[in-house]
Image 1 (cartoon, helix red, strand yellow):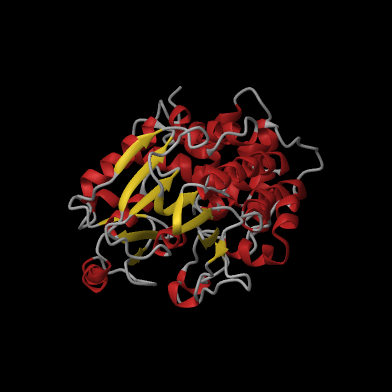
Image 2 (cartoon, rainbow, N blue to C red; image 1 turned 120 degrees about the horizontal axis):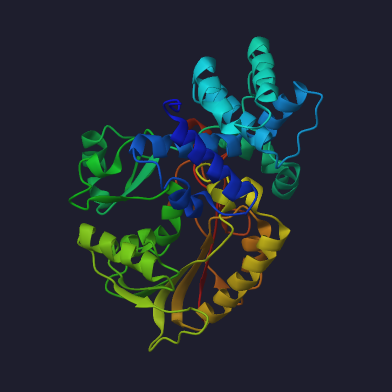
Length: 411
């Protein structure tokens, strides 16, 4: 019997969700294997979209499923995951119910197809709707405290496409060329769904993809004027490109060969220069001290939940504790590599206090507070002079990722 059109994308989405929810993998890591037998780019993208929307709205989808059946469905039951996918397609991706059924029920061959059909039909007849913002898992909401509701509102939609320009002086030029918005010099924002490689300026290296929040740490080091900067944990290289464009002589260090190769490709495309070092920052010893160090530390990446909703379900206290220990070790080493008067910027794309404020409180250098005029309009530094962004900020402009950033100088 011929399989329904689009079934391969749904099977891939099911594998993606299994990898995230059962094995704790990231969507990015799982994507290659999960979509290996999917030929069309459009079907790969659909698989990612289905999985992403399920993870974004998982709590609300489960509540809807449970309201339509008296039968207890375990969280890891295949029928529950398939129903999550069916509802996400109908409620979030505007797939007609008949197409959802045609491509969903075959995933349960030999299983409880009648149950799935009954639950889905009940919910479509009720004409249910999802809330305006996704409900966060209880443990996540507890960690994020009084900002949890605002952050959840910022997670309702995948983010737009942010670009950082090689030459900030050309912001207005590129804003007109790409029909883009701009929230600060050197930044452009386009609607999501754009094909990056087909946009004007890509081949010429006039810009690179980088969330607005992710561009702030390098901006806080200012103009390099030929001085030496170390970009620790540098790949895939957005901040290295920024520092090079700002006139720094950059040493970009990362432990991953694959990610360093991507960084080198970006340097080649943009025509910018930086030295690259493949090494473990916990054992590497520099030959000289630096005028500036940017440590965008490995983290849980919970601040990227707008595009990586898997972090809502993979990250818990154990992962946060483990990565915080690594961050502390990296910060301690980085402090000793600064020249007197040099500047250290520490950043993480995490919403967890343990990875941000708790780390900054241990640094013994002299604080150099972040100033409001260094930031996008509508974003302010904290009372301590640090920066804390989250997806609930700049809501009218489609938000930004969650970051913590702090800055110090060496005596």
